[in-house]
Image (cartoon, rainbow, N blue to C red; front, side, top):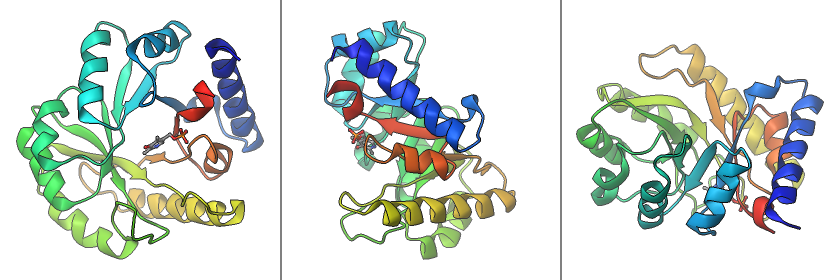
Length: 223
Ligand SMILES: *Cc1c(COP(=O)(O)O)cnc(C)c1O
Protein backbone atom coordinates (compact mmCIF):
# COMPACT_ATOMS: atom_id res chain seq x y z
CA UNK A 1 0.00 0.00 0.00
CA UNK A 2 1.12 3.55 -0.59
CA UNK A 3 1.31 6.24 2.05
CA UNK A 4 -2.06 7.79 1.23
CA UNK A 5 -3.83 4.43 1.54
CA UNK A 6 -2.14 3.74 4.88
CA UNK A 7 -3.10 7.19 6.11
CA UNK A 8 -6.71 6.76 4.99
CA UNK A 9 -6.90 3.38 6.74
CA UNK A 10 -5.53 4.79 10.01
CA UNK A 11 -7.92 7.76 9.95
CA UNK A 12 -10.96 5.62 9.14
CA UNK A 13 -10.07 3.02 11.79
CA UNK A 14 -9.70 5.77 14.37
CA UNK A 15 -13.03 7.28 13.30
CA UNK A 16 -14.66 3.88 13.66
CA UNK A 17 -13.25 3.39 17.17
CA UNK A 18 -14.47 6.87 18.15
CA UNK A 19 -17.95 6.11 16.87
CA UNK A 20 -18.05 2.74 18.61
CA UNK A 21 -17.09 4.43 21.87
CA UNK A 22 -19.87 7.01 21.33
CA UNK A 23 -17.33 9.83 21.56
CA UNK A 24 -17.08 12.98 19.47
CA UNK A 25 -14.79 13.04 16.40
CA UNK A 26 -12.78 15.99 17.69
CA UNK A 27 -12.06 14.33 21.03
CA UNK A 28 -9.16 12.32 19.63
CA UNK A 29 -6.05 13.72 17.94
CA UNK A 30 -4.00 11.41 15.76
CA UNK A 31 -0.29 11.99 16.31
CA UNK A 32 1.87 10.51 13.54
CA UNK A 33 5.07 9.05 14.99
CA UNK A 34 7.65 9.67 12.27
CA UNK A 35 10.71 8.39 14.14
CA UNK A 36 11.34 5.64 11.56
CA UNK A 37 10.90 7.75 8.41
CA UNK A 38 12.70 10.62 6.73
CA UNK A 39 11.86 14.29 6.28
CA UNK A 40 10.43 13.72 2.83
CA UNK A 41 7.94 11.09 4.02
CA UNK A 42 6.96 13.35 6.90
CA UNK A 43 6.35 16.20 4.43
CA UNK A 44 4.15 13.89 2.37
CA UNK A 45 2.03 13.18 5.44
CA UNK A 46 1.64 16.93 5.98
CA UNK A 47 0.45 17.24 2.36
CA UNK A 48 -2.07 14.47 3.07
CA UNK A 49 -3.53 16.50 5.93
CA UNK A 50 -1.81 15.09 9.02
CA UNK A 51 -1.49 17.88 11.60
CA UNK A 52 0.42 16.40 14.55
CA UNK A 53 3.86 14.78 14.51
CA UNK A 54 5.97 13.04 17.12
CA UNK A 55 9.63 12.19 17.47
CA UNK A 56 11.50 10.42 20.25
CA UNK A 57 15.11 11.45 19.59
CA UNK A 58 16.49 14.94 20.02
CA UNK A 59 18.72 14.91 16.93
CA UNK A 60 15.98 13.62 14.64
CA UNK A 61 13.45 16.03 16.04
CA UNK A 62 15.76 18.96 15.42
CA UNK A 63 16.41 17.93 11.81
CA UNK A 64 12.72 17.53 10.98
CA UNK A 65 11.62 20.61 12.86
CA UNK A 66 14.24 22.71 11.11
CA UNK A 67 13.33 21.39 7.67
CA UNK A 68 9.56 21.67 8.18
CA UNK A 69 9.23 24.65 10.49
CA UNK A 70 7.27 26.71 8.00
CA UNK A 71 4.54 24.07 7.79
CA UNK A 72 1.48 24.54 10.01
CA UNK A 73 1.81 21.45 12.22
CA UNK A 74 2.17 20.69 15.92
CA UNK A 75 5.24 18.92 17.24
CA UNK A 76 5.15 16.34 20.01
CA UNK A 77 8.16 14.87 21.78
CA UNK A 78 7.41 11.37 23.06
CA UNK A 79 10.78 9.90 24.03
CA UNK A 80 12.56 9.98 27.33
CA UNK A 81 14.55 13.20 27.44
CA UNK A 82 17.96 13.57 29.06
CA UNK A 83 18.20 16.64 31.24
CA UNK A 84 21.25 17.95 29.45
CA UNK A 85 19.30 17.99 26.16
CA UNK A 86 16.22 19.80 27.43
CA UNK A 87 17.46 23.21 26.31
CA UNK A 88 17.95 22.02 22.73
CA UNK A 89 14.28 21.33 22.08
CA UNK A 90 11.98 22.48 24.84
CA UNK A 91 10.97 25.81 23.30
CA UNK A 92 10.33 24.27 19.86
CA UNK A 93 7.84 21.57 20.84
CA UNK A 94 4.11 21.95 21.39
CA UNK A 95 3.65 18.94 23.69
CA UNK A 96 6.02 16.87 25.80
CA UNK A 97 4.60 13.40 26.49
CA UNK A 98 7.32 11.87 28.63
CA UNK A 99 7.65 13.82 31.86
CA UNK A 100 8.98 11.03 34.05
CA UNK A 101 10.83 12.69 36.94
CA UNK A 102 10.71 15.78 39.11
CA UNK A 103 14.34 16.51 38.25
CA UNK A 104 13.39 16.67 34.56
CA UNK A 105 10.46 18.96 35.37
CA UNK A 106 12.83 21.31 37.19
CA UNK A 107 15.20 21.41 34.22
CA UNK A 108 12.31 22.13 31.83
CA UNK A 109 11.10 24.88 34.14
CA UNK A 110 14.56 26.41 34.09
CA UNK A 111 15.02 26.30 30.31
CA UNK A 112 11.52 27.08 29.03
CA UNK A 113 10.67 30.59 27.91
CA UNK A 114 6.91 29.91 28.12
CA UNK A 115 4.72 27.32 29.89
CA UNK A 116 5.24 23.89 28.33
CA UNK A 117 2.30 21.51 27.87
CA UNK A 118 3.44 18.26 29.47
CA UNK A 119 1.97 14.82 29.99
CA UNK A 120 2.96 13.10 33.20
CA UNK A 121 4.15 9.64 32.16
CA UNK A 122 2.73 6.97 34.41
CA UNK A 123 3.90 3.37 34.67
CA UNK A 124 0.62 1.60 35.40
CA UNK A 125 1.89 -1.90 34.64
CA UNK A 126 4.87 -1.42 37.00
CA UNK A 127 7.25 -2.92 34.46
CA UNK A 128 10.83 -2.38 35.59
CA UNK A 129 11.90 -1.47 32.09
CA UNK A 130 9.34 1.29 31.70
CA UNK A 131 9.84 4.96 32.41
CA UNK A 132 7.31 6.97 34.31
CA UNK A 133 5.94 7.52 37.77
CA UNK A 134 4.38 4.71 39.72
CA UNK A 135 0.85 5.60 40.73
CA UNK A 136 1.97 5.72 44.36
CA UNK A 137 4.59 8.38 43.53
CA UNK A 138 2.31 10.85 41.79
CA UNK A 139 1.00 12.85 44.76
CA UNK A 140 4.48 13.68 46.02
CA UNK A 141 5.63 14.56 42.50
CA UNK A 142 2.69 16.93 41.97
CA UNK A 143 3.46 18.67 45.24
CA UNK A 144 6.95 19.43 43.96
CA UNK A 145 5.92 20.28 40.39
CA UNK A 146 3.32 22.73 41.76
CA UNK A 147 6.14 25.21 42.39
CA UNK A 148 7.26 25.20 38.74
CA UNK A 149 5.50 27.93 36.76
CA UNK A 150 6.62 26.71 33.30
CA UNK A 151 5.15 23.23 33.66
CA UNK A 152 1.54 22.80 32.59
CA UNK A 153 0.30 19.27 33.22
CA UNK A 154 -2.27 18.80 30.48
CA UNK A 155 -2.66 15.08 31.03
CA UNK A 156 -1.31 11.59 31.57
CA UNK A 157 0.66 9.45 29.16
CA UNK A 158 0.98 5.70 29.46
CA UNK A 159 2.03 2.64 27.51
CA UNK A 160 0.90 -0.95 27.78
CA UNK A 161 3.52 -3.73 27.91
CA UNK A 162 4.53 -4.96 24.46
CA UNK A 163 3.19 -8.46 24.93
CA UNK A 164 0.10 -7.78 27.02
CA UNK A 165 -3.21 -9.42 26.16
CA UNK A 166 -6.08 -7.22 25.04
CA UNK A 167 -7.67 -7.75 28.43
CA UNK A 168 -4.55 -6.60 30.23
CA UNK A 169 -4.20 -3.59 27.92
CA UNK A 170 -7.82 -2.71 28.57
CA UNK A 171 -7.26 -2.86 32.31
CA UNK A 172 -4.18 -0.61 32.11
CA UNK A 173 -5.91 1.98 29.92
CA UNK A 174 -9.00 1.98 32.13
CA UNK A 175 -6.83 2.55 35.20
CA UNK A 176 -5.08 5.46 33.46
CA UNK A 177 -8.43 6.94 32.49
CA UNK A 178 -9.76 6.78 36.05
CA UNK A 179 -6.54 8.23 37.42
CA UNK A 180 -6.74 11.12 34.94
CA UNK A 181 -10.28 11.89 36.09
CA UNK A 182 -9.24 11.91 39.73
CA UNK A 183 -6.33 14.25 38.98
CA UNK A 184 -8.54 16.57 36.92
CA UNK A 185 -11.06 16.78 39.74
CA UNK A 186 -8.31 17.86 42.13
CA UNK A 187 -8.34 21.12 40.14
CA UNK A 188 -4.77 22.13 40.86
CA UNK A 189 -3.23 25.23 39.38
CA UNK A 190 -1.54 24.59 35.99
CA UNK A 191 -2.61 20.94 36.22
CA UNK A 192 -5.84 20.61 34.21
CA UNK A 193 -5.26 16.92 33.38
CA UNK A 194 -7.84 17.05 30.60
CA UNK A 195 -5.84 14.87 28.16
CA UNK A 196 -4.88 11.23 27.91
CA UNK A 197 -2.02 10.17 25.63
CA UNK A 198 -2.25 6.43 25.06
CA UNK A 199 -2.62 3.97 22.21
CA UNK A 200 -0.11 2.95 19.54
CA UNK A 201 -0.51 1.04 16.26
CA UNK A 202 -1.38 -2.22 18.02
CA UNK A 203 -3.72 -0.96 20.69
CA UNK A 204 -5.25 2.38 19.72
CA UNK A 205 -8.84 1.05 19.47
CA UNK A 206 -8.63 -0.09 23.11
CA UNK A 207 -7.15 3.28 24.08
CA UNK A 208 -9.92 5.21 22.32
CA UNK A 209 -12.54 3.06 24.02
CA UNK A 210 -10.98 4.07 27.35
CA UNK A 211 -10.87 7.81 26.74
CA UNK A 212 -7.57 8.50 24.94
CA UNK A 213 -7.46 12.04 23.52
CA UNK A 214 -4.08 11.63 21.78
CA UNK A 215 -3.12 8.39 20.04
CA UNK A 216 0.54 8.02 18.98
CA UNK A 217 0.62 5.98 15.79
CA UNK A 218 3.78 5.05 13.91
CA UNK A 219 4.03 1.66 12.22
CA UNK A 220 0.44 1.63 10.93
CA UNK A 221 1.22 4.61 8.67
CA UNK A 222 4.19 2.97 7.04
CA UNK A 223 3.78 -0.83 6.93
C1 LIG B 1 7.42 4.47 18.62
C2 LIG B 1 6.44 4.99 19.59
C3 LIG B 1 5.07 5.01 19.30
C4 LIG B 1 4.49 4.47 18.00
O1 LIG B 1 4.53 3.08 18.02
P1 LIG B 1 3.94 2.20 16.82
O2 LIG B 1 3.79 0.84 17.41
O3 LIG B 1 4.93 2.26 15.72
O4 LIG B 1 2.63 2.81 16.45
C5 LIG B 1 4.23 5.55 20.25
N1 LIG B 1 4.69 6.04 21.42
C6 LIG B 1 6.00 6.01 21.75
C7 LIG B 1 6.43 6.55 23.06
C8 LIG B 1 6.92 5.49 20.85
O5 LIG B 1 8.22 5.47 21.17
